[in-house]
Structure formats: C-alpha cells, structure tokens
Length: 305
Image 1 (spheres, rainbow, N blue to C red):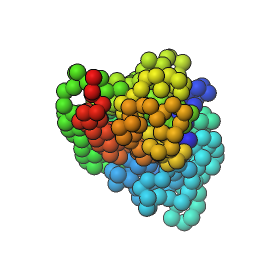
Image 2 (cartoon, one colour; image 1 turned 90 degrees about the vertical axis):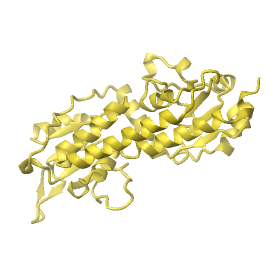
Image 3 (cartoon, rainbow, N blue to C red; image 1 turned 180 degrees about the vertical axis):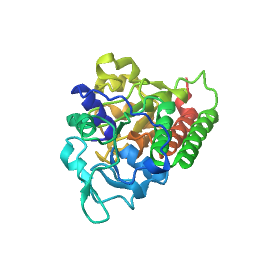
Image 4 (tube, one colour; image 1 turned 60 degrees about the vertical axis):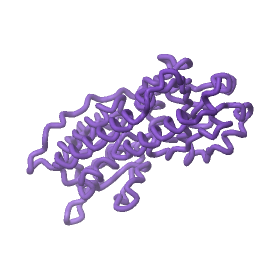
C-alpha cells in the first residue's frame, strides 16, 4: 500500500497530526549527527540535500535512493518509542538517542513519546500544495545544516513545475477528462489533493471530483459504472508496481475497452513511489503528467465531433 493511502488511512483512524516543530536554521553546534526518518519522502529529501550521512535509520518503505540507505529499519505504521530512542550508536558502539526524528504521521503517538524522552520530532504531513511541499524541503535543509542545497532543490522543482504548466497550450474548447487510479479497487484523487492540484494546473477535468465528498478527504472510491459513463479521455495509473496494473490489463476490465483513453492509447503508467511522494522526484511526476496531457490534447481522434 502506497504512502499516500497509508496517510489517508491514518486520518480515518483518527491519528491526529502534530504541529510542525520550528525549522529555524541549525547552528553548527546543533546540526544533528543522527537522524531517523520515518517518512519515505523525507528520506529522499534528506539524501538529496546532502544529509544522507547523518541518517542512521529509516522506515521500512524508504527505498530511494537505491544506494546508501542505512540498514536499520523501523515500522512507521507501528513504531516503538523505546526502539527508536536507542537506535543510534556512538563511536564506541553504545546506543544513544537520535538528534532528530522526522515522521509523516503520528502512529502510536510516537511524537509525544519521543518528545517526552527529550528527542526532537518534526512531523511533515502529506503536502497539500506545491508551496507546502517545497516548504518541507527547505525546512529539512534548515534543520540539518544544508540550507543552500535544500533551497536550490526547491527552486529547481518550482521552475520545473512552472515550465511544465506554461508548456501546455490553451485548450478552452477541449474538455480533457482525466481519471487517476491509486489502486485497482478504483480509489482515485480529487483536485483538492496535492497531485490532483497538479493535474488541475494543467487544465484538465478530473472525473473523481464529482464523486468526492468531505468524508473521503479527497480520495473517493469510484464505481465501475460511473467510471465507464464518465468516459475519461486520459488515464493515469499510479498502481503499476504495487498491483501490476498496465494499459493492457486495465483495458480488459468489464466495460473499460469503450473508454476513449483506452481506444486511443492514452492510458499512462506512472511509478507508484514517485507518484505518492512529494519530495525531490516531484519534477519527474510533473513531467509525466504534462507529457500525458499534451499527448491527449494533440490527438485529433479524441476531439472529433
């Protein structure tokens, strides 16, 4: 199950988010030497900004970068405060407390337990906008002593997104309907979510919006009948790794072969991990979304009256 769905489940179970700890710039004396990351997105960011050598343990889902991750692992869905508190090691091999723990949701009230032990905890919840995603990157830079690299990364991602949005031609007369799949049970995303907002910035019509309500927090589960009737012209699959979904087996679902996206070859597979995180590889996701949108807009077969 991808991180974004796990986060949604955490909300449903009532795991309240914690207020973000101040991200004031770390002084040379306060730069953390032992960081524990319980968020795959934070792990990617820490390594991207040069803080990788400071990271001594990560959660079970952290899998990027593909080289250099620490071997020490923690179950972020059910973390044990005592285990986290003693996971770092001194030069003499003795266990010691981490200087900083980064989480993306507060399972088992881990934040409160660690704080009570004198450990600094920062919670970076799933981003709801580009601004919040970039703010988290910059915050980690400030906390870990890597401000310059973090700012450069944030600026680069901002520029990539801006360039992609600008590259999509105006298409007021072309109503490009899009379905974005999180898993084969037809969970999707509304425009109120982070990735949904990225799609909206490209000028598309998200078919999940009409089925979303406050109860689903922007992650509605669509019915097969509704999706077939909505007839999206473009489909993005964010379940290619977890669930082995591809354009071919997607088309074999009952009624799906009639979709315009299927008939004209506009079913786009995405990398699950990239699609469910909001860190350094955000630019890759935006590139993929933009490429799919422009391809559909340029296909005359979709726009025959």
